[in-house]
Amino acid sequence: MTTRAQRKNVQKLVILALLTLIAVVAYMTIDVNFSKPRFLRFAMELRTPKLLAMLIAAFAIGAASIVFQSVINNTIVTPCLLGMNALYTLIHTLVYFVFGSASILARNTNLAFAVDLVIMGTVATFIYGYLFKKTNYNVLYVLLIGTVLSSFFGSIQSTMIRVMDPNEYEELLLNLVASFDNVQSEIILACVLILTATIVLLRKDIALLDVITLGKHQAINLGVDYDRTIRRLLIGVTVCIAVATAMVGPISFLGLILANLARQLMKTYRHTHLMLASAMIGMMVLVAGQCLVEHVFSYAIPVSVFITIGGGVYFLFLLLRQKR
Image 1 (cartoon, rainbow, N blue to C red):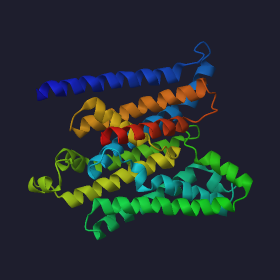
Image 2: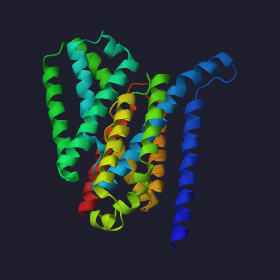
Image 3: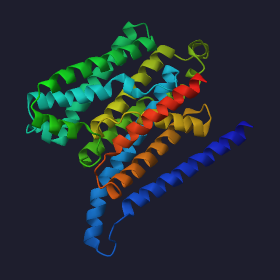
């Protein structure tokens, strides 16, 4: 019975991979003039970085959301509660408030990415490394700290916005919307290296997720160093979310959508299947959404708006279903 269920899940993963490939091919070929090599080369050079950014962001957010929900033992939480989205908006608001929209920090995307990643990585290491240990490895306390920090960062940002120059605020709004249009190849390479290093360092901890979901006492009885594993996984989740957010901007509710759709589709406890399914669903969602943005709405509405609206409705659906 178990073998048959595993075969079904493998078949589902193959189907998801094929659908993802179809979405990628459609995005790269729609409205492309193949008869003129110059136009074809220009289209490929323009779309390839955006496609890679979408695939990386989907993988980072999708896989991290599955791990985060398993660590917290709750399927309706989202990594947004870690405070990285709020910290990203605060950093950029502070840059525009202090230095202005014409500063090098605001105009240089590579430098802005480096600043975002360093600050968010430092904060993540402190909160989910040092404070997690200080709270006697209580996951709920750390989650509460992240929620409080999100409100704290949001309050500071709101205060700066109230006294900010209107022109600077208009430029800031454009910068705070998640976008795949201005991602440089250097940023993509850095994200791939960071995510690869994170996966390699945490590969043993990820392999223990199937045991950790049994509960703390059961995992400890089976020989798992529970507190150390949870701390490392939380740091890894935060690094993945920080990388995705620093690369393209905050995308609220995306992790919630991907993780729950993957769980409903796969119906398994194996986290390797869940993480792959979540990542591929995210790739389809982002690539198909970007196709709509570019070819239907002519860039008038960013893809993050559709994800936020759909995610909010889906979140309410999950709450009502869980209550029933």
